[in-house]
Length: 244
Ligand SMILES: [Zn+2]
Image (tube, rainbow, N blue to C red; front, side, top):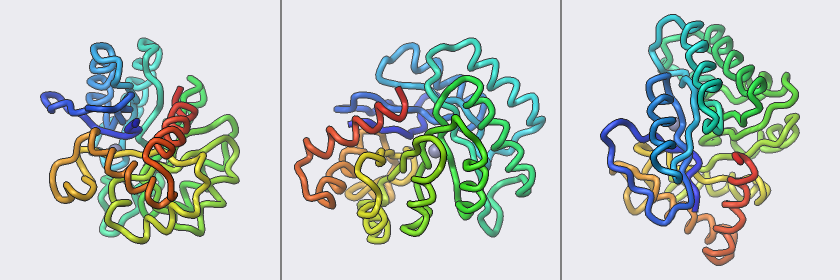
């Protein structure tokens, strides 16, 4: 089992029992630096660096420069993100649409320049996200916590570059997510916790941990009608192909 999207902050308990590795998404520069530090002391923790669209940051250009410095100085960074668009209403991002698109593109350009997969965050913005991703060549990665429904699966598969669908713990309790998952090719799914958020059943509403990704693997095996081991092998191969 692999958790391809978790957040572990300073002082958090690290619960990764039974996992091959966990990819730590970066929501801001400080968290990205902490991810790199954790990845150096624990070889099961892999680091991504990025700035989430909900972050209330100042001086964006300086922050992008800081991200680039982390990429230059740390060969162990495996991905750029999470970054993207947050067009919820009422807004949960401090930035308007145009600013968010600019910040997203700046991080896309880092992913291309340093040849890293991109971790994309998109809420209520899937059309705009796909349009931006489709305008780049040599870009690949994961649509984290995929929420584009059945109708946009084909559009994701038609993007230039190979893209994976990140599926989270809500698969265990939302029938709609299960329906979407049935329509995604098996070789394009990776599983995530987004811990400490989005805990799966039987821990729904509690704090989430990477090791709880097990419950999402179990649910996916049930949906696919195969054994846990078969499901584990397919999904882990996908995660390795996406990020290593
Ligand atoms: Zn996240």
